[in-house]
Amino acid sequence: MTRAIVAVVAALALVAGIGALFGHAPGDLLSILLGGSLDETILKTVPLLLTGLTIVVAFRAGVWNIGGEGQFIAGALAAFVAARFGIVAALAASVLAGAAWASIASLLRWWRNAPEVLTTILLNFIAINLLGWCVNGPLQEAGARYPQTEALSVALPARGEVHAGVVIAVAVCVAIWWLLYRTDEGLRLRATGFNPSAARFAGIDVDAQIFRAMAVSGGCAGLAGGIELLGVTHRLFERFAAGYGYSGIAVALLAQLHPLATLVSAFFFGALATGAGELQRSANISATVATLIQAVVILTMILFGRRSRA
Amino acid sequence: MILLAITAATPLLLAVLGETIVQRSGIINLGIEGMMLTAAMTAVLAAQGAHSAAIGFLGGMAGAAIAGAIFGVCAIELRADQIVTGVAVNLLALGATGFVYRELEQSAVFVRSVPRLGFDASVPLAWIVLPALLALLLWRTMFGLRLRACGENPEAVPSVRAHRWTALAIESALTGIAGAHLALMLSSGFAENMVAGRGFIALSIVIFGRWKFKGAILGTALFGIAAAAQYALQAMNRGIEFHLLLALPYVATLLILCGIAGRVRPPEALGK
Image 1: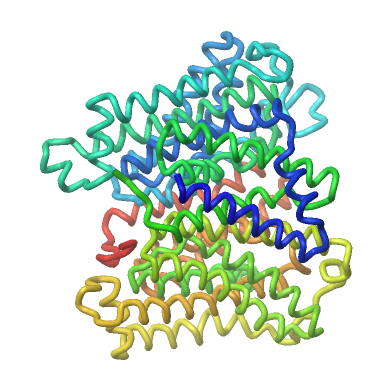
Image 2: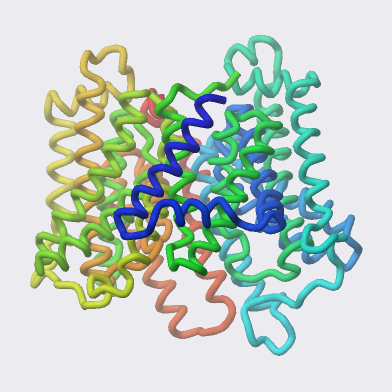
């Protein structure tokens, strides 16, 4: 907890300092950065929470799923195709597609011992180009004017801008906490991540455990993509994923890999992303400051003690 | 066309050579993508500042060294998780270069055309001189033996950290040249996220090359020629398949990983 606060303060101070070097008043910079609208912050929190949980589940099981970005896209593509069967089918398809995309990596790890760090990253690039092909080809809007799909006719129910995906994401967050800390499956999963040889010795089928963890992890990222499509963008386009998969790593590490803390951490990064967009619009400061802050948060978490895994 | 392909793949090869050395010492550095991106920007800044491409290459090395030092402090000194640290270095480079680029966008630094070298020495350097020197270092010297021992059984080496830092310094120099070559010779300056996954592809080629320099050259050459063929195809056929072609190198690398990774033995202590 202390570590997390130190990390956040350090990151904000550093960004204000760098901003000052380039002639931006630090007070103004921080007030815009942290003063984004609540509605937009909530909208940004939803995908960050789910991609954060993606990382929490994977890292707790000791498997390096760096492929949140690709699983996010796979989920959104499946949701788009399944949307004609209704909103529930679309959401279910997004979970399954995310899980399937992640399972390619765990299958290759099991079958050919291919390191999932690399295969998940490669699968990100493959998904990005697959999406590019879809929105320029088979799924492009009628008239083919822009590289994007038609807008979907179904959407998540919403009140104002805030859609029902918020409820789903929070429910998933609690469910993941329940899974990890209140079930045998969660105990085995954490044991596998903590010490795979000891877990194997204790009779846990480590390969199957990792396979299931990867599927749950990818399912979260896929759902994030599905909700983003059905609640916010309503259509697919080339830069749909917008880095949510990688941001999830910062979200999860700030939460010290605890599912419930991920909620707070995702909200913080959601506010930052909202504020960074506002900075770019009103003060012409690059919105990549949000990425910069994510990096500094991860590095400070590292500097102030080793990551807890248990 | 082969020559063009080889030139275009030069930054990739430099990154592969650097990562091979580092992984031989037991470190997996995912931050190589960020090191190259930082180098690309500092190379342009230095070259414009000094009106000299040679200074630009030095600037690139300095930029990569800064990013490398951040990685080293966390991963070597503090023994933090190497994969998490690497991801952080990439995000840091992406955020920092994006910020600086927008701040200086209007100034002449990123608008004026960059100075170039009269003779592109990086190509023979990367494809012949450096692999030979690095192979000598790794396989024929006491230092190389110890470096490899750091990757296999670090308990047996008294000065693991010094050897790993040296490997990281070599990688920084190489990725610095790579970033500078990319920005100053292959492109006409800096662009956001211009490394575009080359660092990650380099990581895969290291495995494809079985942590050997001959393998590194062969893998990079195959990859470079495939990439060039893809651009040629793209120029002929401007249809929608262009996006599928863009995915091809990644699919190929994936196939390489599962075709070969099952039968190769990585350094025993890699990532530990």
